[in-house]
Image 1: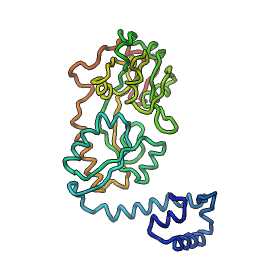
Image 2: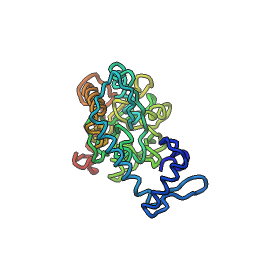
Image 3: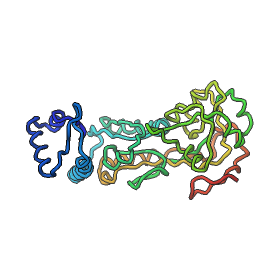
Image 4: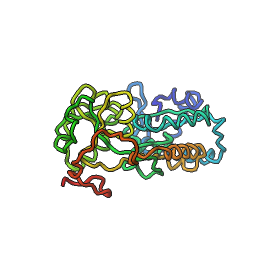
Length: 316
């Protein structure tokens, strides 16, 4: 199913090409279906084969996990690679400390970071990735745990005079925005999703693939962007940004980690989960009173009211 080529498939499971051909012939006889047909140089699965693939893959994964889930996991000796779907935002504000700690405790353990794919739910279900880190509100039924909270702020170039006074809702909606969309289907980011759900459309002039691209895209312009406060603070150390309060109180952003149900009792997964949760617990709350990191505070927060049960409220 993966290789779409008989010779390559045989090689991947250490069989000869004739042996693989014989195995496929037996399957065709058993299921009374061609299973695969040639289209150019590629084998194309039949609908029957497509239907079988998912069930067979999951059955094999269950068998594999039932065998290895009880094996001890020694971090100091393991060379395991964790495959994790996460955003540039989470990578920059959170995972640096995780990688540092793992390098100390498990020097041979490695990571493969993957962008948010359109089929992320299927990747988690099949166990093709170890973890998915994203806003909790978008997560499916697989087990998950909250990691940390953040809140959205507005950022603009230090020369943007429109940010010299607290933003009104009308100004915010009329200004040119740098917005984020994810994946091939261009999924809106969470703040865009909140706005669209309630009929508000910003004037988007630049679309980027991640929050980390907003600061350089507003630099030298009068555009603004909406991004998590932790990431805005991260970039403000090197890019002259104005960070101001939004004129509408978006709900808190809760980032969570999710893992396949099939990995729930896997020792390596449990070990990594503990590290993720411990490092997240050490993060300073963006809501706690500390040094003043917001330049100006908007006085127009009552333009929208929010019900936490519905994520976003209606225009007042």
